Length: 245
Ligand SMILES: *Cc1c(COP(=O)(O)O)cnc(C)c1O
Image (cartoon, rainbow, N blue to C red):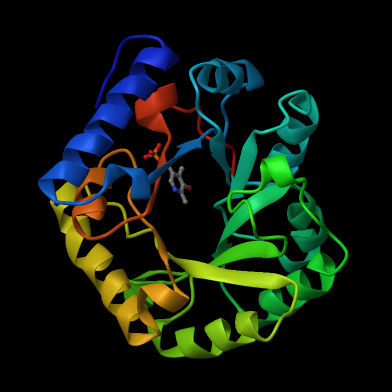
């Protein structure tokens, strides 16, 4: 992980590492998008990354996302990704700002998002998928089972995917996971492989083209396993202040 340097330099280093990991896996680096995770970082840091060409930013908390979106309205093609746990009563705010919601984790949330998305259209320049005018979502899977609270249990995934398909205002784009923290990044690999296997069991890349997996410590392992979206915070912005729980 890069320690010193400006945000632009760190961003360049992360992009270079993504290209290396893609090459090592005989994959096209163009098919791997970098989401810069800006939670707890000031808007100036986001502006610096934007000036260096970054357009996709990830936030975990709805209120923080709304405040930053408001403060950065002058950047018309900045794209917000919602990557944190989403409560149903916040769904209506998120559909107005997020270009992709990575963290859909229940049938109830799908129904609420479907209802709230019905009369919302993202401005074309804020769309992650230029031709998609529905609200794009990924389903988060609790890939490590019982030990994990976030995400849909693998056995319930089919029902949640079908629920998304049944909502005319939502577009199903793929799966997401956050493996349990481990100091050994290679230990995440089996979880990434498991997410890909689940994708293949539930319709494959035609139905679920995106796999959102991999963070600062383990994104190279995620790319080796087939990640199309990597969510990287610390390597770009430096350490975060811990959010009071
Ligand atoms: C914070 C966070 C990240 C980024 O983590 P880093 O280790 O700082 O790269 C990625 N995904 C999710 C869901 C997060 O909450």
